[in-house]
Image 1 (tube, rainbow, N blue to C red):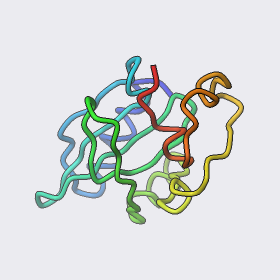
Image 2: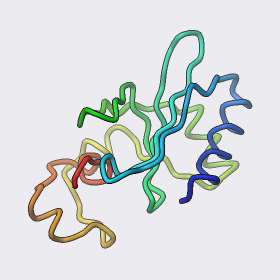
Image 3: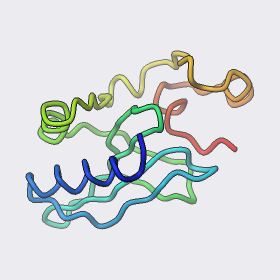
Length: 126
């Protein structure tokens, strides 16, 4: 995943569903993922994507706080899958116990000991 592709997907999908894109944030040292804020009728949703192409939705996001509230948005998830081949992880999958992914640094996993898959994939580890 790169910045240009992330933004292209976000802007195109949002336009098709009538969402307004409020802003996009690129990964830094922390947090380690892309985030886009979209809104429809004053309801906000954050779309998250990792470098490794893990996607999720959260009802809250603040780049200075290590707290996400994973949610499902079936309509948007279906559009992302159908048009871009993006598989968005569900709330249940993200709240399930952590399963190691080969692309996560073993030393980070050992040190931070994530409890859930969401915590392991979308994190503020330094």
